[in-house]
Image (tube, rainbow, N blue to C red; front, side):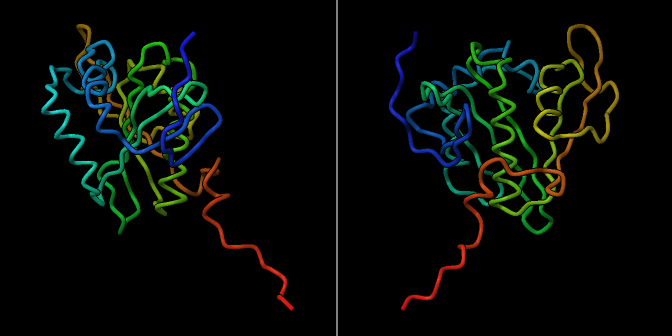
Length: 203
């Protein structure tokens, strides 16, 4: 049984996972995740070796405070173990849109609902904190577990690019999904981002 780690700084706390800022001291962990081809064959276009320098540059791009992307570290609450990352990218504040990406890097934490909850928390941030209207993602047809997780989190299929992904000797569709604010119920942040309750006049 793994020893529980100290609670990190967190932004959004759900039932089983929490989202926090990315951490420089986890760069080697991120590099390990993004070099496991078994992990990357479902979310990425082309798995390839990632150097620590490249991983650092990607971290710096998010840590610089860009208005067009926000990245989160995903923790399992029971142990405060880092298990993955997710991000909103290509954020367009004028039109209220963004794209969502996620990776559960620790194999022992896949298929257990952590990704689904992390996705819902990220959508909560997008809609409730940022005021966005539409968040989309793309997922490959063969990633059946990912499709189910996204559907549970609130995404719906909106179209396909047929045969646009070659994998395991055949062609698969690229599926586009989105979630809109009007169809999403905030699980956490609606209790934080709300007006103060009226107070009786002091006497």
